[in-house]
Length: 251
Image (cartoon, rainbow, N blue to C red; front, side, top):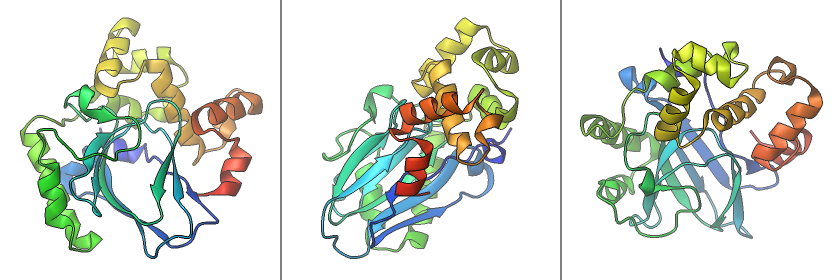
């Protein structure tokens, strides 16, 4: 079961009116593709006239984030059920690894659900990796990021999650939490405990986030009972109606 075959979350919102902000993305190779959705880079290519506000949308994923301007700043991040607007300033350079939902097995207490702006003080070798890759281009950073993923795998801090992999690989068959439970062969209570432990989300919250993510690539009537339901759900997760989101952000 490879989540990459069914689930591809959108990149976060970059305002269409903003210039000199570059986003790059690369896919992992081999077996890492079952764990990692992508490696990514977000940076300014020139100083901006005003602070850049990054519109981060929930996707169920966990990211490891590196601040390449100040390599002491790093962290593990994941949004829950609502978008966050992050003020990144007028000049910035971030790199990260995005893991599929349920893959992260590390301490949930270490996960940020907000802006990461303080030096990393945990036990992971994040500052060491950030310093190692700070002076090279994005393509040259990928080998070190893959090495970090392999290290996390050996340390059992990431792992294939059979339950979430089944869900992500069969999204077109899921219309309800009951469908999730049947598909994963778990009772509703077991599903609740498993998803809460491995994603931080209750089943109905995970389904809500996954549906909104799917709506960027499929017609809303394939996912929602009607247009009103779609608009309400989309706005609750992203903070915008679908029409306003499409007009404001380049996705």
